Image 1 (cartoon, rainbow, N blue to C red):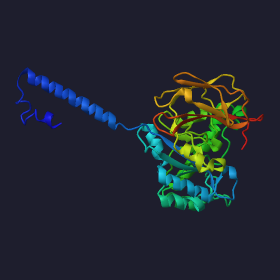
Image 2 (image 1 turned 30 degrees about the vertical axis):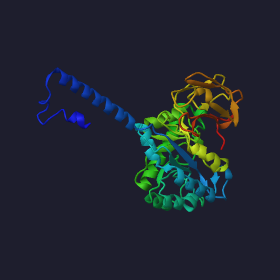
Image 3 (image 1 turned 90 degrees about the vertical axis):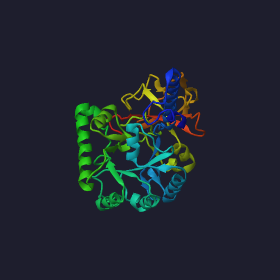
Image 4 (image 1 turned 90 degrees about the horizontal axis):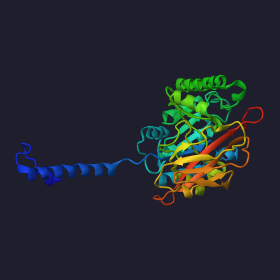
Length: 374
């Protein structure tokens, strides 16, 4: 831009004469503004995107469905160190709220339930690699029984930089009793549990961010709305990457235990992209009737994926979809099972070879007594 600066001397525009010079300046200023606009656009931060991993046990002596062996866990961490940037959960939440960028291969690591084997078999691996991580704990369970962390251990880990956050006092099924008690009384009861858990963690550690993980991943719209009102960001157990369109009171996490511990399939999830779903026609995951008689429609806003390439899966099987340029609709023909289930939808990225957009729609169905099974 030296030729533009040459037009201006120390007295401003004394060297410019006549209409011709004025036209030249106007052209130059226009060019300069356009140049800056292009440069700013080129430097604009990409939308935030991250995969969040969910672990429970790190042990080969605990139930396989919620466990990853120490060797498998080390393998996962070696892969992350080589191919991803591990960021804190709080960094992910901040980026989502402000729509600011994260590393293009960002991953956050979380654990639920506060088991002692996290300290024995995972903590050193994570600290040695400089990986931040979050443990969602039930304060009434800490120091109770040999499988749980003690408060002394929690405090020592906290001093090492580990974040401890709210998972309710005692890992209850939060939706139990909703129909019997009525929504208002039920919500008041479960919220008292959440508030007391937060208070106990803060009393023990001095502080705790307003991050909340639903036990068993179960929630409904009323509970999510209450968490939002109280300033919490909440996490489920359905799958998918997180991005600027994600629901901050129902952020998905990828389970990485049991059948999901296989690194070959986990790699695809770690590299997934948040499907930009701007509207969901069915927002209530708690289902009163096991049958959903209307199609569920996702409205998608993206130039990097084709709705015609979206595949949706329920119970491991592909289900039929109907698409337009900006929507994907599916119908669940079978009755939903009691407990937890979900539909996962994926589509390949056009510009990012080998990466897939991922979105999950969870469902929670009570048994005949209004309770939810483990």
